[in-house]
Length: 162
Image 1 (cartoon, rainbow, N blue to C red):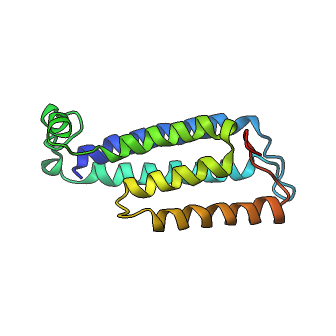
Image 2 (cartoon, rainbow, N blue to C red):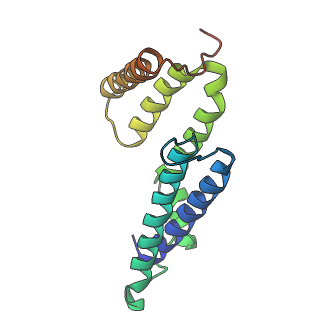
């Protein structure tokens, strides 16, 4: 990945982290000896923003001779290559799959949508067959059920089948 791609990625993730922090200001942090529900999102968002700023500064300190727009996403030859040479833009499809997963989780339930999302993302990342992604999806669902439903007594959206 060229430096310009790292800078663009860092700026996008920085915007996401800032939006995440701003969105989670609705939850109270309370005090350190008795933290509220907003403390965990605040800590996670702060760590994300700090690490992205560090990555951005580190990338910008590299010599300008290394910064190239040659393989950048904004290069039209790159986009044409994606569309004509049969290359698949995996992050784009993963983003669409994640958006669809979030959209359908209320209707078909957490466990079913998670099962299919794990299989979809595993195949997208290069899994050859369906056996390993299916076992992984079942393992994730069992782990989530045991942790959240049994131990923590929390529930996920059930969906229309449950």
